[in-house]
Amino acid sequence: MIAEKIILGIDPGTAIMGFGIISIKKGQMEMVSIHELILKKYPNHETKLKYIFDKTLALIDEYHPDEVALEAPFYGKNVQSMLKLGRAQGVAMAASLHRNIPITEYSPKKIKMAITGNGNASKEQVAGMLQNLLKLKEFPTKYLDASDGLAVAVCHHFNSGTIADTKSYSGWESFLKQNPDRLK
Image: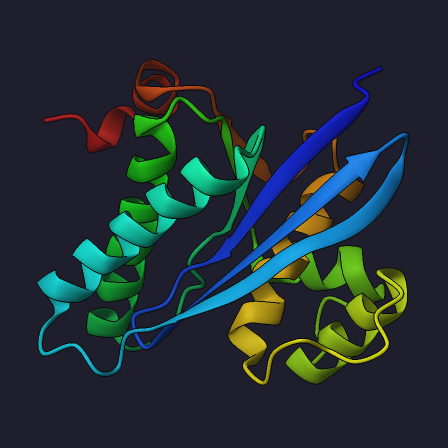
């Protein structure tokens, strides 16, 4: 059994991107940090992507996570929004893979189910349950995107060792092997 494991959870976004970091020591989960990257202020999508990449690398270099967990893009009606969200997720994935950190994706429903027991729970319900699970007196951020990033990390911890409804990659070769349609 590993004595300590650090998990970085990421909720990709192009307006606000949430990050949560937890530590697992002897089976006990503890919140290490929670962040959000406010991207609304940047002038264009390309600049936002650069900041997502830079912030993800900075978090990896600062906290040295053993694993990264990401929320997979949900399917919506607005194709442009989905494309931008997918790019944000891809940049965070690329930063993690650049540092050879294994990544796992979870669907929004799977994350909500792992945290609250209800795949249709609200962001507020997820944040409330995280506060309870992590024994926090108050929630350390006003942005629910940041709590969503923390929820991804906790979901990953709860699902360690299971395969259902997730995709894991240990590097570029693994990613390409599981996603041959993305290779041109």
